[in-house]
Amino acid sequence: MAQRVQGTEDLYGGYMRAWQHMTDVARELFGAYGFDAIETPALEQVDTFVHGIGESTDVVRKEMFRVVSGALFDDLLAKGSEAGLKARQRMAMRPEGTAGVVRAAVEHTFVPQGGAPAKLWYAEAMFRGERPQKGRLRQFHQVGLEWLGASDPAADAECIIVLMEYFKRLGFDPSKLRLTINSMGDSACRPAYREAVRSFILDHADEMCDDCIERAELNPLRAFDCKNDHCREVMEAAPKVDEALCDDCRAHYEQVKRYLDEAGIAYVEDPTLVRGLDYYTRTVFEVEVEGAGVGAIGGGGRYDGLMELEGGKPTPGIGFAVGFERIYLALQSLCIDLAGDEPTCVYVACMPEQRAAGFSATLALRQAGVRTEADYQGRSLKSQFKQANKLGARLCVVLGSDEVAAGVATVRDMQTHDQVQVPMAELAAYVAERA
Ligand code: AMP
Image 1 (cartoon, rainbow, N blue to C red):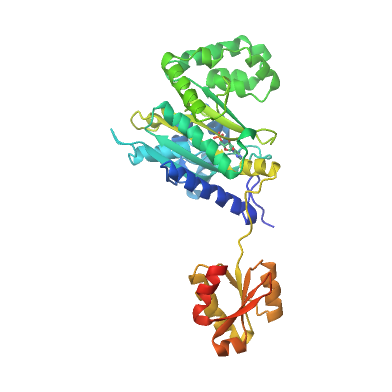
Image 2 (cartoon, rainbow, N blue to C red; image 1 turned 180 degrees about the vertical axis):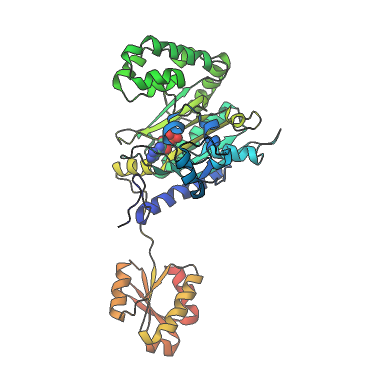
């Protein structure tokens, strides 16, 4: 039997309805904040992620699913190296949404010189070659938004405000959410800070794991996130970014916090919050659900250097992404149902000889926007009624020979069993009003 790939899931039934609900809520809420939907390709050139996310990140080094066309695959295996491939032949499945949106913004000049910011949101599958476990998949879904061209700290605050409002609308009790924020500095102050952390790690090399020692050179700030408890203990004494911020970054961060205070958003400051991707500057944030045990359900931050890294002109940006699967698990742990009820329908039941009349009635109901089911397996009238009950039909339209001869249909309320006869010409309007 064919099986799905490990770490991937089929979305169907209530799970699919939950995902659709998440995208519907996003469309409405983000639309109110002026964001338009975008969908970028699931496949991008590897360079889009290398430039944007950073060569040294785990996402780029270990987790990206790399893709070559079938025609090149054998050649690649034979050569044992991708050295001969052109940039356009080296592709990857997107591990996150921001780099692709920013690549598109550069390619289509979404933010022209002196133009208004571009505000975009997406709901897409992402792919990361991680070890599958609860809440950590190889294909998962994110809803996210990107706000390009806005440097004002109000944009940082509004991004966080809309994120928290989104969680609220999905059913989370805001008091159960833990929002953590930090500023990671910018190109003026981060290099010196990075160097200070690098030196600290090297000074404590005998106490730290091999990964952290490697991180010292590649991406020292990631040592704050090491899965090894002892490394994290050692890192408690490492220099913290809040002491290293330049005046501009500090002023920006203070203003973001003032706006959050004014909006009544509760947050915890964590100077060790660094996030996994290289492109972040200044404000970063992450949200967890207390007691859910699924890790972060969303996070984001400012990325003022990313447009340039993708070949555009300097343009500030900020955004976030939330993970559908983790949100679903977290809501489940709180006994909140994201899927909602199964949709109800109207069932058209008819005697086999009245099939043509049944077909016309079904067509008319669907054209009036009513979710309509009928029998396509030659069942008896009795078993059609059973089927209608099974499907949770609210109304059943019955077409027997007497009804058809009289040009009417019997409409039965499946709960009360009340029946009325309705002229065929009025059936669609009658049912649409009551279904
Ligand atoms: P990140 O870009 O890593 O901050 O991811 C943003 C959000 O996507 C996280 O907060 C998670 O909710 C979700 N997420 C990230 N990686 C995975 C994964 N491998 N499986 C499921 N959800 C994920």
